[in-house]
Image (tube, rainbow, N blue to C red; front, side, top):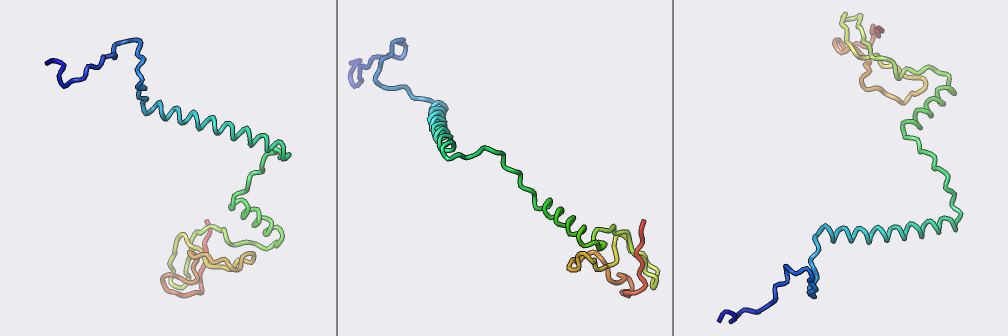
Length: 145
């Protein structure tokens, strides 16, 4: 009765000579590692093929000059423009403050709006045309430190 309903399989888990037809399960890490090795070898073959094509085509391996940033290009353009024009530029003066002789008020950290001879289309939004207190556009003095 002891064997009824049960299959009598040999337990070979402790045998050192395990020649069972069932392959061992690989861990997920081992599977990923084998996939990566296959991909690496495929890429190495592709790289060697590209090297051969590069040599055949006569591609020179000279270094590519670095591209200048937009800011560097704009700075160099402005420097050339400034040298060629010879006109003064008011755009980058410091905002020290203005004094209104009409109402005797001082407004710090602003400038009087002036048209720049080099850049007539440029408009600085924080520059003032009139006194913020009395709204008169005459008798304004720009102070410097």
